[in-house]
Length: 134
Image 1 (cartoon, rainbow, N blue to C red):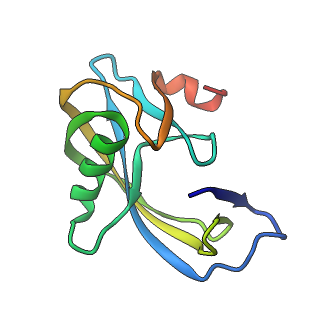
Image 2 (tube, rainbow, N blue to C red):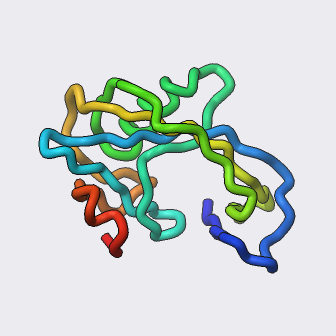
């Protein structure tokens, strides 16, 4: 399903729902952070996604990292909770939502890095590279 991201855009549609989501800052042995290029909007992002009602927020982060990157991770801490009313996501099915995200830190337990149906590219970047186009 296609999605359009709006940020601080006065022409953004009004949200009709709020999605609870989890993401993870996954680091490698060198302290680099794993990013994915999302297939639905072609933007770089942390792995993550919406929470199912039967899964905990840390469990959502673990599941989404596995689904989107092929890596098994263990949650090691909490980065923070985020909501930004200026960020609106409009899906092609008519849902327009805001997002409440809980971001965790995680370490790699096993697995092989692999793109998925949700990503087109995966890359570890140093924290200093985050301010530049990846």
